[in-house]
Length: 639
Image 1 (tube, rainbow, N blue to C red):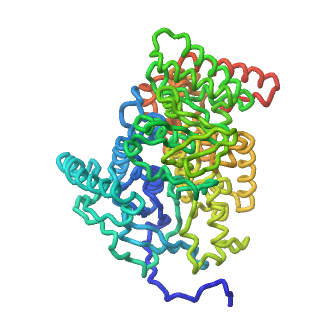
Image 2 (tube, rainbow, N blue to C red):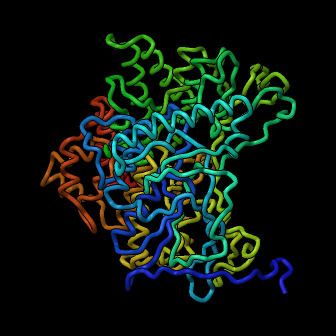
Image 3 (cartoon, one colour):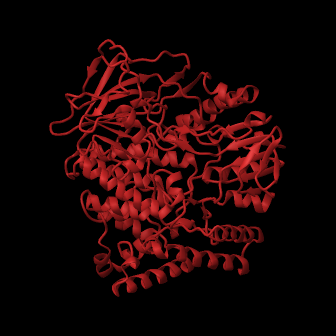
């Protein structure tokens, strides 16, 4: 017998809810934006879908966000292609609560709530060697601490019920909860605070009891396939900093940050200047005595949320810009950055403080020689605002902690009372790591064990198009939400992933066998590594928004025929090229197209900044001409 294998456990009851003839029963894990579009796309093709969600509501990362969270991509860029907020002519940045309301509308329209089992977690997952069905052990009655979102009911409930739940029940619970957190600590209280909430689907008043025993562990549920949508913000990554044991102050990860006023009068060090770090830095700077932010070498390429005219900046995340070949990308960025810096400096109708912020952004980007083509983006100017308005310090050196704060390699010091580590998250899949199966073989053809499977899944580069495991060319082990665009938004990428996954599961798209898929994964990885360099190794799953979604569209047959559109509908072509890069373009043709709805959206959308679009268009036309004369490296992307 194998000494690594634990003793055989008592057999469990296996429950299989059969789908309609010719279809599959798929388990979607996670009911954030990626999980919701997975449910919708699979259901649309006739499959039976069950979604497992451990929290009491939909929304994923936005059900645990800090109080003033604002999305870094606009409503137009973030939206799904088949559900509109009706305000495309005035795109804006949703708060987390507004985005949850949007997702509720999406779930309500496509009847997704009925397919979700809340407060349930997948404890174990393994595949039966004979039937090839996935067998899942579920834990029900999962505890979750209260959050603002817990008390935000959706459209299904009457307005009076929604208002009472949020303003009376929610306010009472949260006031008591955060009061206890101040006396003890958030880490302790969040694990044992009992409270009442209103069930988001049934409307029943429900007790959240941290001592409630788990249920249903004696059964195994069988599924034909898994789509894992647990996202990139589930498992926090908090490194151990040099000298940390000497530091007398408080260290917390950004996932435990909720309110800035608790840092009033303190000196605070922010580690990391990604989008959350940038926001948190600016918020804390309004209350703290002094703030410093430290980054590893280069920060993300900074683009403010709004343009100088108040419109959303990602109107410039468009085809005319990102159709430029990679070789010209940095030049496009360089020209745009200099132009913006010039306008910010010499424009007479700008607020002096705003002008200084924009000039500082241009200076920082130019100093580190980055562009939106080759660097992970920071679509958030928060830490720059804190530098200009509150005197926040920026450090790029490695540091060591002592009892009073940080000592940087260049000899500078920053004494602080608290450290907020905005150090990101890691991918992990403990459902494959239960002791009973972890060293058993998952794929007999190559001897892949579940331990190795969990490690492979943690790196999206090892998945076909970063969403389908090569060992399952039929799509029965798939992932959504793990591709991270350098500029752009994750939910639209997830929509294109799940459209591909649904068509593969249905047999409408036939993928090549496992060895071929692994070779294609290596080819894609080499491409992204070349494009993004160091960032590609640091941020697993990093992709170019347009190239990635166009690739998905080619797979599904939904890539817009730009030349045909240019000749027959020039106004529509103009909007596709010069407006925000939305997924509506992928509903103009191909399977499951909805051209009437897509065209109606493009009728309303505004186009990007004239100066930036003109510069990008000049480079693009130059590249097109050069490619015609044989300079193949100058070939534009789908133009």
